[in-house]
Image (cartoon, rainbow over all chains, first blue to last red; front, side):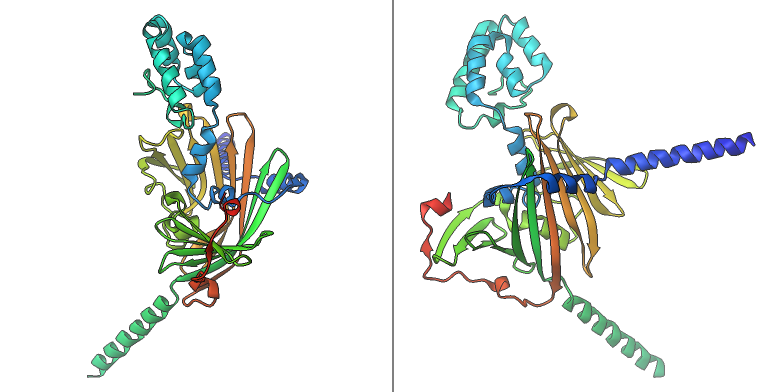
Length: 140
Length: 241
């Protein structure tokens, strides 16, 4: 009897795990339908925005989404708090990069944030290469 | 002699079958595509008639907006947009929007193993099974910033889920491929739901619905061979923006 119970419990747990995996990779379509049904219709979106969706390159869209950082904010943060690497955390980087800035007395005595400051001003129209950049020298 | 005759008969039967199957190749695909985007409880949508010539790898899209226009995209990413009302045309080239990077191209040609990740420079880093799901992990190329890994999940050989991960496995996008429909030569998800997670914490849902899918061995619609009139003028700045 105990063995039978054990088998049932094992079977039920395997079933639960399977269902959990299935739900991880499936979307609640009814909930999505509900969200669209409750939303307010606005004007037609631009053709380019539509093209950047699933039917075009997925990567392009994703990278665009990740580039939502303001160069001006990064420059201002660098100017006032560059020695602590705050602008790097704003742009997205590893914790070690910030520690490196502090341990080297403000990024090798302020030289690194100064170069960061200059390159951010020069590349202010496209700072994507500095976003989520794990390197200590982000311009390198 | 009798056996030999049977052999020849069988050979011709197989030949006919082969010709018949080739004739049914998915050379021309037409469908209706509805795209909806939801952000901050506001939705925007548009509908497009899409015509895919698989031989020439040309996609022609007829947009039904306030200003109707036709967009012709080739494998090189050359995009010609024609506005019939004003007889104007614009040209641009965007490699990422090439017809060979369109999901329709991948599904129509059964290139569903990576759905274009290899073309983007991704490399397969691992593959495992999670119950009935086959899970592949793809490492991004060095030049691609913002994405580190892409996880693709397959069920019965078909992609059902993609997950784009940035630094520290932060999920920036999830894509669900659902409502698969079988055609003779390929299978197509009639509903694709993308959820993009913005750095601000908001998310954008993009839902794409395909309907009225027709597969044919011959072009039965004028848009498969759409020709922009030679006398079309370059588009004015306001439209090209």
